[in-house]
Image (cartoon, rainbow, N blue to C red; front, top):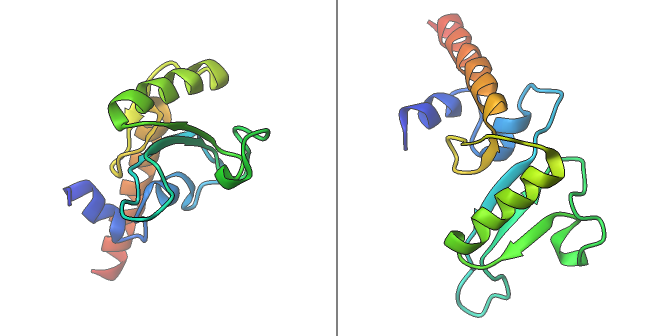
Length: 127
C-alpha cells in the first residue's frame, strides 16, 4: 500500500469509487481493468468505462449494467478503452488514480489535493 492510499484510508476512501465521489458532487469517467474471476466463473477479463449515475453504453448487454466493456487482457483492452473514452468524452490526458483506475488527469490532481486537505484537517482535529 502506498503512502497516498494509506492517507486516503484515514478519511474512508478505499477504492476508485470513493476517490471519485467522497464529498464531491461530480462524478468523472473511470476506466478500470478487471481480471477474470478464474475457476468456473463466467467473468472474463475486461476493461470497463463507467461514470457513476450515467450509462456509458445504454444499448449494451444487461450484464454490463449500462457500462461500456471491452474484453481482453489488460495490454489489449486498456488502450482500446482509453481511446474509446477519449473520443466519447473528449478527455485529452489520462492519469492513474492511487487505486489503479484511470480518470481525467486534471480531475485526479484536483481530487488528490482536496482529499489530502480533508485528511490533514481530520488529523489536526483528532490531535
